[in-house]
Amino acid sequence: MSILVTDAGFGPDDWTRGFDGAAALELAPETDPATLEIAPEVEMIRIHFPSFADGRGFTLARLLRLRGYKGRLRAEGHVISDQYAMARRAGFDEVEISDDLAARQPEEDWRFRSNWQQHDYQSRLRG
Image (cartoon, rainbow, N blue to C red):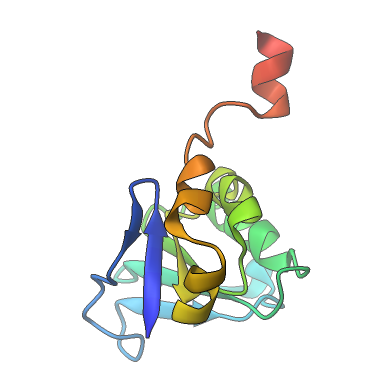
């Protein structure tokens, strides 16, 4: 079972189409975005994080957004609450975590970081 984390907090996964069809794409963190062709019918991309110390998924998300991907972008796996703001700034819409991680890092920890558009170094420099 998994829990979906958004700026509103914890919630159930509302993606019902699965990841086997043309509407969704699953990517490993080592995927080279330069060689990746995204079909127009892709509505969801889920990028796997094998470890919280592996930041390649953040780079991949940012590159996908810079290349013009406008669909739903999900981080899945070992993303911790301290990384939520970074995930949102990189372009992710949501984070999918396990029930075990949710038990160790409750919803309050994630919601505390849901103000990801504030308190970054660029905002402090501009302010």
